[in-house]
Image (tube, rainbow, N blue to C red; front, side, top):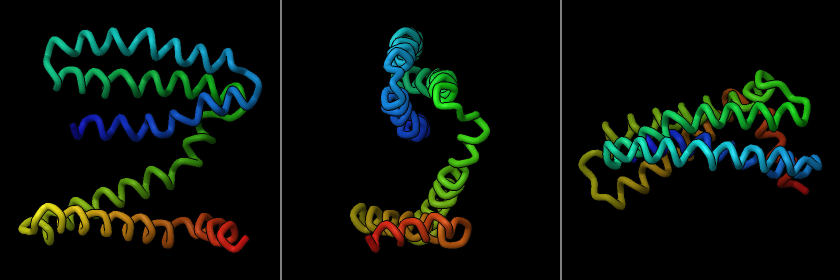
Length: 153
């Protein structure tokens, strides 16, 4: 199941692509993107299913990132944004998520290992939130300033 968490990260980002191109008046691009997923993912799942749930999960992990790149490229081309610009804007999201994940794993292994399930969940959640905020406070103060400005309205 940890494999699916990796794919879920890309799925969350990918969710923006369809509304983006539809808002730009290009619903045909959204349809093409959905058709690409609908045509290729079932084949990957079928092939992966020969290896059980693990194979099914890995088929998702292997195929989805490629489809994500293809459909994101198509969507970005529609709005005139390069892949490099797009990923540059996502750098703090990725780096903050990695920092948060590493922090949670370290705290779980060192401080939360002997605790009960509820205590571990609470501890991991608080650690993750604190780590993500700490990352943004140190490396992306501009975003925090934007959040404060929006909250003051």
